[in-house]
Image (cartoon, rainbow, N blue to C red; front, top):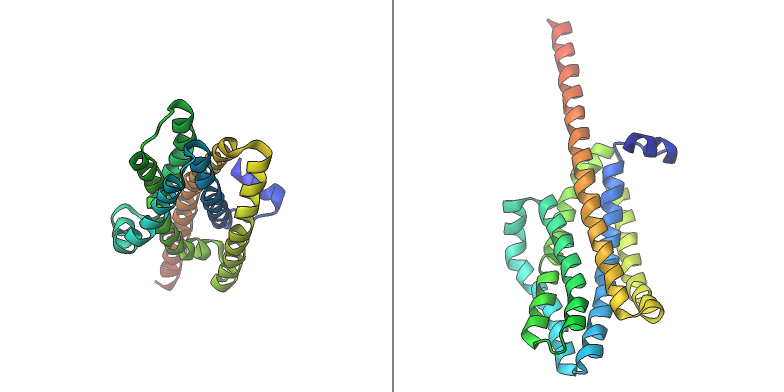
Length: 225
């Protein structure tokens, strides 16, 4: 199936994991920017409290500080790809649960609001670092210059930072804050699925490449002898 899609789109199968990683990275960054707009508005709409809105904002900022201390250790221990996928799963669950909690319960404690936003944002900074460590491996697989790939990634990252608030405000005005967060949660889940599926494809491609190199080396050694 993947091979047929690559042929139809005229994409090298070896470049597909890199393209999907960059695409998922863009979608994840776009989702983070949408959540940064939608979550405070949701909290303010349901609680009518500026203090609760500020606490929700603090819950998304404090993890950035903690990531400086635990991010590298988490990547070393669990692996960059696993951390990246877990970050998107937690972001999806957090964004999905927050509107449900406000809909089902008339009163939600400030501590619970803080913890829910905190957990959803905890792995985001670490996931960004994890994705940076994954790029060189897939660049070698795709045989595309690293500076060219970094140029594309930088442009897409800036585009996500610019479009995220615009898309978030547009969705809120069109379908409402709650539905915007449901769409946002789905986008994070899609990112996790993309990364998990095409990681397997990348591992198979790398394994076949190494096997080919070994066979070529064996053939060369036999001809020399």
